[in-house]
Length: 113
Image 1 (tube, rainbow, N blue to C red):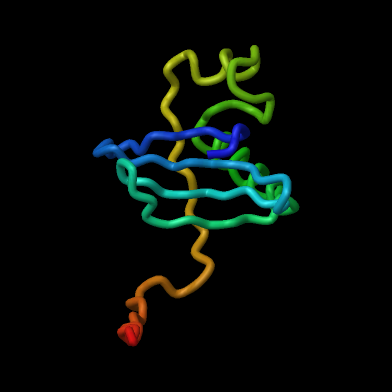
Image 2: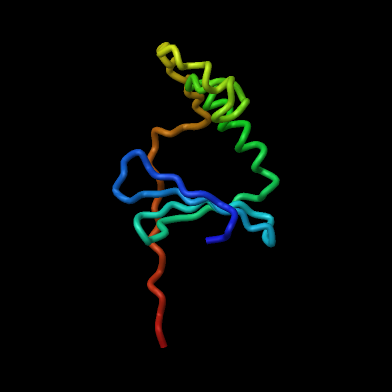
């Protein structure tokens, strides 16, 4: 893992983690899903898209009652939500038909000579 990154644990436990790493030589941020020592999937995001992701995460944080965009550990973060007020349920915007099933295609078996 590169020296610039972080590790997040899944709420469900079971040794599931999300690893976020920055690769300046590739101009990419890699988000990878792990189960123990097995990588189950990864996504390479162009570093140029980080601001858009941060804007979304900030909106989620605000909708979840986590305060303004000041960031964790700041005075604004500590004052909001500390009174134990109920957290409003965030609205969900549907951006497409999610009722259908995913089409799965079997990959051909590789031939070994």
